[in-house]
Picture 1 (cartoon, one colour):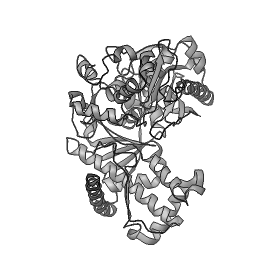
Picture 2: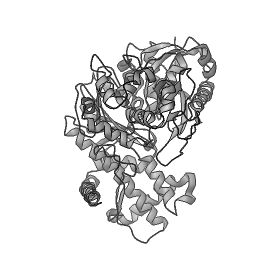
Picture 3: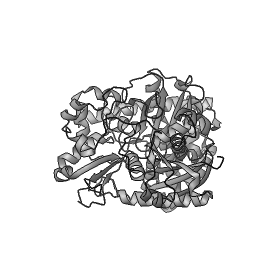
Amino acid sequence: MTNQTVMAVDVGTRSARAGVFSASGALLGRAEHPILVHNPQSDHAEHDGEDIWQAVGTATKEARERAGVAAEDVVGLSFDATCSLVALDHEDRPLSVSMTGENRWNTIVWMDHRAIAEAEECTATGHRVLASVGGVMSPEMEIPKLMWLKRYLPDRWRGYGRLLDLADFLTFRASGANSRSCCTVTCKWTYLAHEDVGWQADFLDTVGLSDLAERAALPSRAVAVGKQLGKLTDEAAAHLGLTTACDVGAGLIDAHAGALAALGPTLSEGGSGLDHHLGLIAGTSTCHMALSQQPREVAGVWGPYFGAVVPDLWLNEGGQSATGALLDHILHWHAEGRPLANHGHEAILKKIETMRAAEGESFARRLHVLPDFHGNRSPLADPHAVGVISGLTLDSSIESLARLYYRTAVGIALGTRHILDALNANGYAINHLHVAGGHTKNPLLMELYADATGCKVVSPAEEDVVLQGTAIVAAAAAGLYPDLGRAAAAMARAGNVIEPHAARHLSYEQDYRIFLTMQDQRSALDSMI
């Protein structure tokens, strides 16, 4: 049937987005609804799971209305979400993860860093599961957060009856299936999808989580991304404005959905050229997604994860915890940036363009930024890392903000270069960056990604590739394509290409040497404390 469509839902840090897509991958209608973020302490971030589900319902109904399609024409649905942790009691009601005790706050947000000490304990075990997380456990993964809950909220821990990654919570609410996606548990729960026994009981015993299977209601095996989990329940269909004939597919983490769409065109080549391509899923934070036909261990880079994006392919995942969020911070931090409000980025980018044209290569040459304001996820794997700015003066004008913003953007691009070097030293030969997410709307960042790395930068034909990646999953689950890889190859298309500027690339080579030197200096200073 030519009128068959699919619904994709993307739950980010601050909003839920829904999109209706045609079977060929075209976005027909899109809607967005905000969600709440609760920060009771500086390193704690929490969601209200019911607030998320309500936002999802609002967004799906509006998206279908804007697409102008009938409910019965939506034959497949899937979800992507941040790697946040949802807690339910034995009756599947929200149960708090918050020090406030309020049950509405039943979800630990991905960027929550309350479990740094527990992450370090995991790393200290030296267990072989660490080989799949770059050798160092991150506080952004679920195992440290689960340890923290059991340690600091023991009464609530005993009350938990189901613990799920947010994407799995959404498929559970939609279909009633207690399945866990290979993407979520492999990337965030130390599940080893490439082994016959995925859950490593000895590791869970070592970190004090021997009862995790009971508390989390964990299935013994994860399911492949895009597997059909069942139809929408009566309640979910009414809530989402769809029908009970709609198939629900096992979802994935938001960045991984973006990687599926961004790298989809390369899958049509049978995977032969995968080593040359990287998906850069860049918004609040940035994920660097590289697929390969064989496992590669890269220090400080997560993975190798088997089947985390596409069945039978391995994933390495680098990351920067604060990129778009860092540029927001710089604007809000500077006295001249705060009055710019919602138009701050646009105004500063215009200012930078004018100043660069006037000053040429001398523009902000003595100003340098290490962008690790929220730790270094990759390749240093150091959540304690801090940002560094070198070259400040007493200038507090709008021009000083333009220089600082520019050099922060340079630092972000050089951080990506640092991750590429680690990947390329371990079997990859990446020379194409497929950038998706909010950074595609920032022309300065897109230019810098090309010039600072020397790679061709490819933007997708579809603006919202995270939603498109999830639509690909929904299409596979609904049987519109025989498998996920062929769905991705058919529904995703590459867009514009930015070639690196040779002269500017050479100038950023010097900046990169300074970048690495600043890291060494930061380490030296830390060793003196």
